Length: 323
Image (cartoon, rainbow, N blue to C red):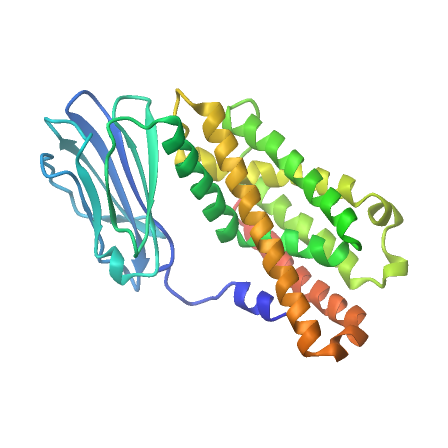
């Protein structure tokens, strides 16, 4: 319950924790089309600055506000190219957000870096090798799942619902296989669905699990009880489309699409396993510190079901209104 209170949406606050986004798209050997998007903080752009390599000449125009964040677009001229230069997000060290940097050394060759308050800049390598791509996209996958509150709550509900660690392992494995399939299909353009309905169905999948959690074990759907992996596989197909939406925004290196897909999906799984491990560890610690909790397991699970269902129902309504 405390976890849900932390994860619940907060109304009336700024978007200061939203990530920044810097994109440099290659136009030719010396010019790059720059998109710089920063979070809104109390009606103004967050005071962070995109600093390109010193050899680049650029004049950022004023920001425009789109209702969520502030964006500026311009052309940067870098006679010596980007390789070997430094990209720094000035002021990022004083924030609690991060910035995704997506850039091309040459047209179509996308590379990605994630900068944080602890690491506000990096030196652009001459060309990303397989190890660089693997490291970058695994990190992006871990970050995405750990910041994807709806996906985490779905996994949390599975942990509460499925009895027995072996059965839970099979359910999580089915969820993994399913979202790997649709993630690859959507990221490669084979499967293309608009994001708003996908996000609404993801929230609806959480409502389904929450409903089951709120019921006494003897009244739960016998099919879901006997074959939880079928349920998790079915909903995993939808969640994979949600992961793909994030991956499309990041972009894929055209020369190493299979490796980037594998690395991103591996990162998602690592983040998911870390989350489950934390849930188990916290649960074990609570039961050890407060043994009386074991006597109220059903009531706690039912309460969690109502809390998760209320939050997910809010998401369903909110996302349907976006249609």
